[in-house]
Image (cartoon, rainbow, N blue to C red; front, side):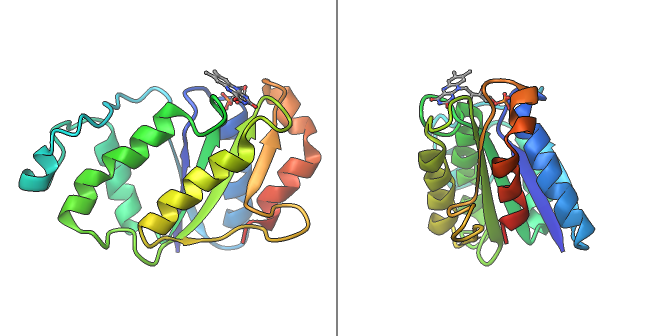
Length: 183
Ligand SMILES: Cc1cc2nc3c(=O)[nH]c(=O)nc-3n(C[C@H](O)[C@H](O)[C@H](O)COP(=O)(O)O)c2cc1C
C-alpha cells in the first residue's frame, strides 16, 4: 500500500521535516511511502481556461504531471502545509486546484483513497485548524476518506508549532506526537 506525502512548503524546513517523520513512521508499519514536494518545482496556478474539460489534460504540462502519476497509484495521501495567512500555502492550494484536470478525465480519481493532514504554523495557534479543514474539505469533495488522530492529541490531524524554524518544530514534541496518532 503506497502512501504519498505532499509537502506544500517551498523550503526544506519544518513542514518537509515533519512530513518525513510521519512517512518514516508509516514505513515502519509496513507501508510504502513517497514524499513529493512543491519545493523547487515549476507549477503554474490554475487559470480556469477550461482546456482540461475538452482536452482531458491540463494546458500546463509542468512538474505537477509527475505528482499525478504518483497519486494514481497511491492508496493513501498526506497533504502537509505550512500555515500561510491563516490557512494552507498557495503552493498546496495550487496542487489542489490543478487536480481539476485529472478530475475532468476521471471524476472518481481520488475516490476511496485515505487522506491525512499535517499543518505547521509559526505561531502556536496561527491557523493550523483552518488549514486542516481546508485539507479535509478537499478530501471530502473528492471522495477521499479523511482520517485523523482522533481525541487526545491529534483531533483533526497533526498540527505543529515551529516558531518559524526547523529547530523550533523539533522542540514541539507534543505536536510531533500527532504524527504518530494519525491513523
Ligand atoms: C507568507 C507567510 C505567511 C505566514 N502566515 C502564518 C500564519 O498565518 N500563521 C502562522 O502561524 N504562521 C504563519 N507563517 C509562518 C510559517 O507557517 C512557519 O514559519 C512555518 O514553519 C513555515 O513552514 P516551513 O518551515 O516548512 O517553511 C507564515 C509564513 C509566511 C512565509
